[in-house]
Each structure stands twice: as C-alpha cells, then as structure tokens.
Length: 356
Image (cartoon, rainbow, N blue to C red):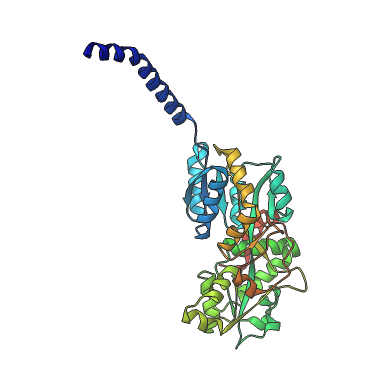
C-alpha cells in the first residue's frame, strides 16, 4: 500500500509543480500590470468632493491619489518637483491663480471635444501652443454687502459708486493684492481700460473705513457691526452666513443686505474654480478623462455645491437653497483668460495708488 502511494505521488508531482508555477506566473502578471490612477493636486477641500471622487473611480476604475493644500503651496510644490512631478491634474480656485500656473508653465495644453462643447469659451484659457491650458468648472460672483441702517442701496449698486465721494469713510475690502481683488480689477481693465480702472482704485483708497485686512467673512462682519458701511465679498461667503443656524450669524444677517453690482451695465464680476492637466502628467489620458468627468451633469452638481457655487454647464440645474436665496442676476461677459492676462497691469495700478 505504501509503495502504491509513493508511485502515485511521483506521478502527480510534475502536475502539482506545473500548477504552482502557472499560479505564480499569473500573480506576477497581475502585479506587474499598472493600476489606472491619477495624482490630483487640489486646492479644494469640501465634503461633497468625497462623493465626487468616489463616483469617478466607480465609473472608470481609475484611482485618485490626492494632495490637498492652499493654492500657493500647491504651485510651489509642483515647481519644486520639476519634471519629476507626479501631478496629473491641478485644481485651483481663482482665475488669477490659474493664470499664474499657466505662465509658470505648469499646465499641459490639451484638446477635448467634450470640454470644448460643455465649457463656455469665456470660462477657459487657450494655451500659447495648440490646445487649452485650463477650464473653469464652477463660478462665483463678487457681491456688494452694505449696512441697511447707514447706507442707501442706490449709492452702492455698482462697483464704480464705491469709489465716489458719497462713500468716503465707508468702504472695506481685503488686501488689494489678494487674487480675488486682482481678478476683479483685471476684469475692470478689460471692460473700462486702465485709466478708468486706476481712477476707481484711487477713489477706493480714499474711501476706506480702515486699511484693507482680513478675509471676506471679516468684511461682512465689519459691515454688520457698523465699522464699515459697505464691502466686497465672494457670493459663497455670504451664502454660508445666510444658511447658518448659529444665533450670531442670524443676528448678523438682520443688519446687512446685498446687491448685484452693475446690473444695468456690464454685469456682476464672475470668477471661477477650475483646473487643467499638469505639464509632466504621467497619466495624461486618465487626467483628461477626469476633467471631462467634472463637466458631466452629475459631477457638476457635486463640484459646484461643494462651495455654494454655480455650475458652468448650462444643462445643469441649481438645487442649492442658499444660491436660490441670492436670486437671479446678470453676470459680466469677460473672458477669464483676459482677467488672468491683466494681473500684472492690475498689480501695477494697485501699487501706484497705494491700495495695500
């Protein structure tokens, strides 16, 4: 009996060895197959983005590796990484910053029929070479907030009026060199030209209630407290306060109101959050696929809702209750690429008039 078992074992041993070798070969082949993935460098950090990213992976099988930080920190990191940067997609939150990344050579020009069809021409930037450098995926507006007790609406319903003598000692803004302000001034240059924009900036400096400081929420609070009569803010900061259930925010809302500037003329200034493919992207095909996904109807809702912004794709409906509180308005029709190109001229104007 023992002799029979020995013979049997010797007969099946080659088969067992062959099976094991085949299994090992298959495992090695699987491990050597590159995983589809993208490396996302993002200045966004909103809870809804978790669903946004997981849905992309679910639909495509492409894994997203994220690096999240402030815009400037991300740009400096990519520049320091140089040609070895693993970045595939760069997402930033202002036209001024996107333009800065473009002139620093951090974007790879791409061509996409999907994005060209869905993203309006004024919300994307053509590259110096053939292709598009970056695209806007959501928009926000630059509103005017004023104190209802001390300021008359008719005196602050345009950006130009903020610089008129009637508002002397009433105006508050954040630093003039902040990208939000640079983008606004860049748009003004495009609409009105440099001389008129410089006169406006000089009038703003003359009308300051205090030296520029703080963020947009600080400006809103200063208006409510009476320290300022009127201030500029991005729309999503106001929406956050309008939707807040905190007693202090509800009390603040009772003291302020807002206005869409320039509704009878050029329209309210619009800025964007957007992105593009990194210059040295190791996964360019997957990166373009991700940007095209951001322009899909479902992704647009997540992307815009994450920061109380508006989607850029016209077929997407807005279901954000906070945005509905703001109502409809006339936006300016200015290319974000032109806003970017005007940044140097905008900064020179600020320097000449002493807008800190």
